[in-house]
Image (cartoon, rainbow, N blue to C red; front, side, top):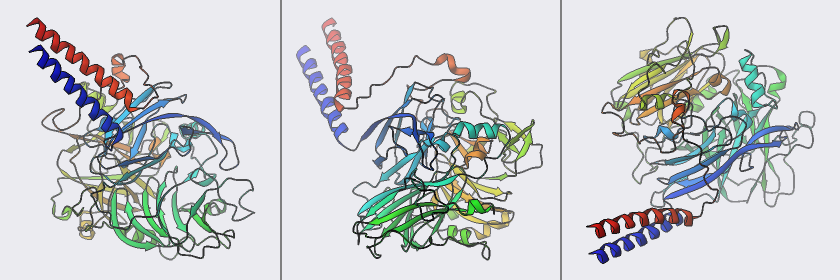
Length: 597
């Protein structure tokens, strides 16, 4: 009997060791360790401290495949708390990994914490960034590319290369200085420039661009086609993106393959991501401009003259880019230009996405709407003597205890589910107020923008169908203009000045999820709300349980265990050794039990 038990245990141990080695070598798990700290750079000629990851700015690429399990061990070497959030990654039933203040306690300075999540049924181009206190204005962002599994066809030929570009406005002030300005009730003012991949502009105009700035060079081969993944990670400015003399064939937007069409330029609003196929079919003996220029900004001349400029360089190029920059759109005579461009971005319903079958539209146009939220922003309002941003006249005030943790531990009084689902003329207020939503319901959200600049909104945990947008006030009659067949599914949408945007979303992801302005100054000043999607059957029925490494703060600070730092070694041998030790301990218990019997 004893011999049989020991033999079985040894065989089990061998199987675990073999499977652990296979997992480390295969596609199942993707472990990385990131050191988040400061470094000094001068992208616009002024030395400043930025947030880097593994001494990289932008941060390293997270290059993964559908259904992989991701482990990101983050060491916080900043002098302030840190959270990383994953823009567009849906965190199925796992808001514990979302990395925003409503669901997670921050990683204290000097501590580390491991994010663990599965990229369930997702593909596409996304990015991560620090979510607290305007830190994204200092960097800390990087790309996430989620590739198709080999068995799933992609609706275009395999590109010859993959190129990521981060575009965004940039201040030479530190993020702490910018925070202080907002705390003092001031506007941030006009940014100092536009960066492309954290570098300043090419000197296309000697009167506008000082000499000596480092600029981005994108090297390409003539006759080849490249996939450009472009993300607007700026603070507040919508940007128009274009490549001199080259067409950009749009193929994907935030995880959805699009109906393919060519654009000579495209407006990319704060927080949005797109993929283009660009063929190198022009005269290869010269370089070309890659341009990101501001849209919908004030008429001050200096801001209109600011551009982000990189260089597209063919391998056999013999001449610099020349001539004026390619023209940006002119809305003076056509204020619908950008809106019609946005409406033209539609879902490719005949192609697969993360699964082999066509991604389809899920017949969303025939699903009955169960709840409607109309979320209206206004010009800044004064609340308790402070200049604040609001949605439905509520300026979000984050409690010290994250909302999801408060629920888990049955704490009352941390927040209220009294956020108004419709605009009103109630006195503006600061509150930890949450929207209550019905699990498995079908939600209509209308963003109403009563300001003079473009707003951008993002919903964590979900993609939504962008079914309509127009100028003026939304009414129920506006539903007659909705796209009910092939509206793009994404997680970030723009709302034009004096206009509205309507989205539809299936509430199939349990958790507490952040709806926020992607413009950092508006977000910081309270333009956000959380939507609570609770399973009526109770905790841990469909949602993943809270992780063992949960951080505690606020009213739950007494539950925090001492920090145990993870080793920076990532070899599979450490995991195998740990699992082997655990199984040997189990074998020992079995043997002891058998001997005792």
